[in-house]
Image (cartoon, rainbow, N blue to C red; front, top):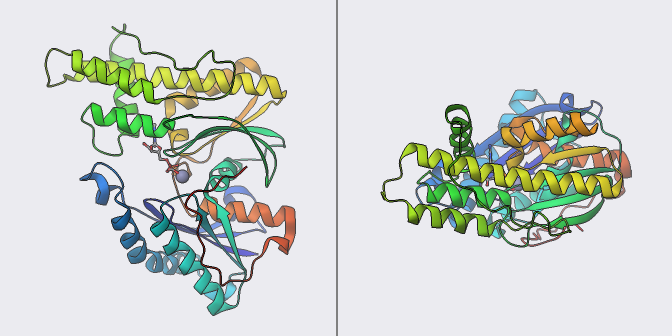
Length: 346
Ligand code: KG4
Ligand code: ZN
């Protein structure tokens, strides 16, 4: 089966072609992406109207690109999978309208998918893992610990009660004067501090570390950073101060995520873990989980770095896994242009 995957929930237009006769990464026949990061940077966040317009501009050229790259053509496609939610309504509508219309024109089935299901299953691109496993989903919109019983069978164990981890990274980066989205830039600053200076000057809180559940709270961390910034004598923050803050902020987030995830694994008696979502690209987080995996003898899988943030491959791949488990019972006749900007996977 050849699956066309389309992602347009936020600020990345992603299109991919996946062949279900192959496994993991090998099934990716072509992958095209347009990131809107530069478009939104001057506004300090995603502007929904601009996002929709940019998806409209790029979706067709990206679809043409994956067919040119893979030397396939539209008629070879057996299934069109796309993100139906959650996300920005206007942005989602571009993907759904395109996918459903293509389905009608080609008389091919469609499969509307939950964005988080795409993230959740994407680490399996990197290798096989037996079910059940624990998934830490850390993106700009979500921070969740999930028990993945099988493809399509998920139990939520805990989640952030306020900001998502990626959101906290981005908001803190903004406080330090880094350009949106600052998550990865903040992480780079932090890694520089760890290399250059031996001792940290102040401590940030580890929110809800010992709350006894699997929930998180990250909005207070951002406020704690704001207090440090306000206390700083000079309003022009010097590089060493920024590095210290970034370092301590990253340590706080990594510590809380690691503790809660390992406790969840112990409670559920599960030795397999996946880390998914944009913050899954964080190298400090990966290093800590790799060390823990060696120490506690569990397996941890990450998506390939380029597929941590939003992309079309994760949508096509999730559709492939669902097809492998459920066959064509999951196929839908095209024609419903509905999107679900706010929807739960559980
Ligand atoms: O999964 P994603 O592309 O979008 C959502 O579905 O939310 O995640 C984007 C988020 C942003 O908040 C971005 O700053 C964060 O992932 N991010 C990082 C890193 N790379 C991306 N956060 C920390 N360290 C990184 N290296
Ligand atoms: Zn995402």
